Amino acid sequence: MIRLLALLALLAGGLFPMLAGAVEPRERLADPALEARARALSGQLRCLVCQNESIDESNAALAHDLRVLLRQRLLAGDSDAAATQYLVDRYGSFVLLKPPFEPATLLLWATPALLLAAGGAGTLVWLRRRNRLPQGAAAAPEPLTEAERTRLAELTRGPGERAP
Amino acid sequence: MKRWLALLPLAAFCGLALYFALSLRPGHDPEVLPSAMIDKPMPDFALPALEGEGTLASAGLRGRVTVVNFFASWCVPCRVEHPMLMTLAREKGVAIIGIAYKDAPAAARKLLADAGDPYAATGQDREGRVAIDFGVYGVPETYVIDRAGRIRRRYVGPLTPETVARDLLPLLHQLGGPEAASGGAAP
Image 1 (cartoon, each protein chain N blue to C red):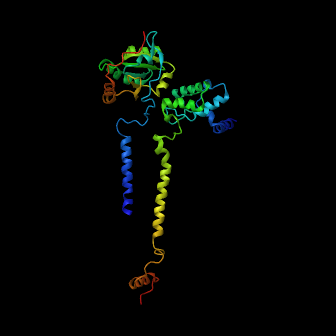
Image 2: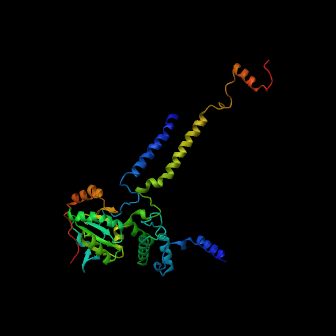
């Protein structure tokens, strides 16, 4: 019975990862629609203290303050973008877990394209060089000289046989 | 073509070595974030003063160079920083505005009574809301405000003698001398 309950709890934890957030009951908004917006937004905002968790997941005191602040902004009638911008104005775009496309993040966003271009260029050069080799050069090497032929015959003769 | 390729690992090594050398240089902390508030106006605030009934307001700080220090009695690095603040206030004549971050007033008062009070004026930010307006993400943090009321510098963590000598004092000198602020608390 206990095992079954534990299994069920484990499954529930896996099925509803949203419930695993750090949001405390007293932080929640009465309006489910607003609360859902707050949860979605806070999942996109970085906790400045832990730096690799969203404020939705973090137990840091600052994350709690920012969750409450975010909900206050939404209650005050802010749009999602305005509420997010409120924090970006104070903490910079680092507070966004998904970095925006701006001069400081140009290299970050361009890196996959640059790597693809470099790899493509390398492959192209390699293919060109391979195709430029004379056709059949590898398939038909130079014929053996007379000395080599004699040596080969000696080597391939079976054991016990004697040279004539 | 082949020779050029042979140099590739060496070039990659040099690039990585340069990157690591820059990242590991002394005094560089990759977790310290750049402030989004640099060159922006200091946020408006009006906080209850730590001592007495007065108010510490941002309006009272205009027209002079100000150092704003967020601290808390529960914050260990703040204790580390405290002697440096005392030196700045007593020996260098820097007027520092203290903001007690999420601190019990009695505890903050006790800290200043025990370890000395380096602040020209001290306000209480019980909710930490003013700190969020400044972009504070941990105490201690120290901000330099110029005469026009703009944030010019943010120091994360305790002020070290190196930071003070190399950066803070030259900056204050450049902005118009450390004699600057005398406090923004109304009586």
